[in-house]
Image (cartoon, rainbow, N blue to C red; front, side, top):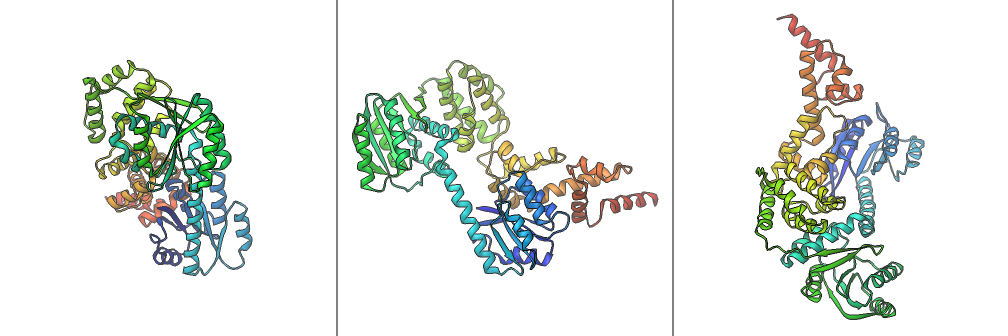
Length: 486
């Protein structure tokens, strides 16, 4: 689900749109409501929304300045501008920053609903295009290489692999694809040549080419017999032989690939430029490796201490080359680790020492997979220890500490805590500011603001008054008077 922030200085407008827009029905989650542009900017930095609906005229930081700042930060946000009569010049300026949607006050409910749907469609189309280009990047290649490691190790994992990856790899779990099983004398040259044909013909290739021995497996999205015949001709023109053409869903084709490939020990996968990497089936007969797999999975699943596990990982990994160690690590980590995260990190590993460090970091972060409450506790603990950092954001914590989708974590946090992330962070900072004011009476508001994570004293002033009902100065004066009466 996409996320949105609503910004307007008129409370009646904010509350009306918050209530009468059927956000969930539109596939959008309203994650923040701001009363001015500066507050909205802070929310954008923290929550990284997909959509921002903003008034053009607001105090402290107007909508135009907000859009300009977001544009300068190169944040990917779709804006919907709301303005009064006679403010079109402002809207025109905003559109120079790439804003496409402009609504005139008073906003009609149905018109705003249609605009939100239109923006959602635009965003989803861009996301689909990005996913469609996934095979052109290093991450997509390492992800699929890891999938190949898994299926070669255990065919029983096929369905779970497809289910976990269908949102990342550009195919639907129910889509019927074509797999051309071919044979070639020089597989490298053949694959590189076929890749150029596939790109030229504009055929979607959801899975990178795979070879096993002299067999080459090309899994393509082909819905026309004419295109299929064209591909057969291209195979033969490149001194290849079409052994069979199989049709089926991704899961079915992977099972067929394993059957066609036979009892192989090594396969190769090619990226979009024809670069090849081998994947070997790792023998899993040694007792110490089996025990290591079991122990590592337990640590990831439960967070229990295992003091000697890093030493054992170092000993076993160091006895292997990088390819063998990676294969073992995939088996160890996959069951209890986010699929996206694992292969994104594997793509950055250059040697066995870095792989050992990666295995250690997964343990140290205690990545939760069996309980929903645990990530929320991690998030709260991180805020408690790092609230003074002005750059703290839900997105960064999600990706670097909790290892979860930011949108999902945001919903989970609000469900468990009863507050949005931004409100909880602000509440924590304001409470800490109050503690400091109670002790350090001679401190300035700017000094207190900086201590609790607000680099802008004006924004701190606004937040403090919003959460306490008084300004920082009024609060400090009240404390001083209270002490004078004691």
